[in-house]
Figure 1 (cartoon, protein in one colour):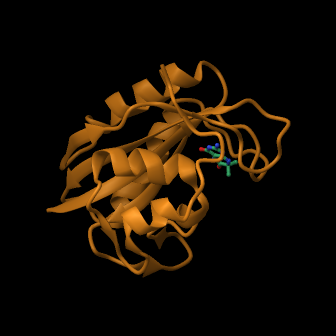
Figure 2 (cartoon, rainbow, N blue to C red):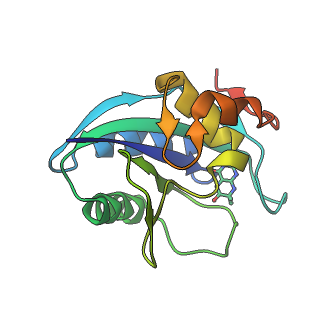
Length: 159
Ligand code: ROI
């Protein structure tokens, strides 16, 4: 049994609903239990500024799925909610990232875990801190230290 963390993001087509529905869909993954979903947050886009603000959240799962099977599962949820492969760093209906998979460090063509963008992403670190304040991220260190080195960059809790 492994605890894994998934980042959720949407800035198109009813963002709040997209993220809520994705959290619900995570409960349907095989061999997996949803432990907790963070509050929803609003964040200005990282990347091109000519796109809507994002709704972001982080979910904690307990799973016996292998990392690639978990990745396939979250990609299927993206597809089911209308994700198409768009321009890099452009607007998206739903983005699910495998952030952390237990204490494993994986780096190959299909998957990099922990997610390499985490240290710069307030919209990942702050929601993650809400649900796992004591987390130690493999190869990156204590989450609390990452949070203190990452300005909020306009991140706000969604009302
Ligand atoms: N920016 C924000 N604020 N939130 C995201 O989830 C997000 N996802 C992305 C890029 C385009 C990098 N920017 C983002 O994939």
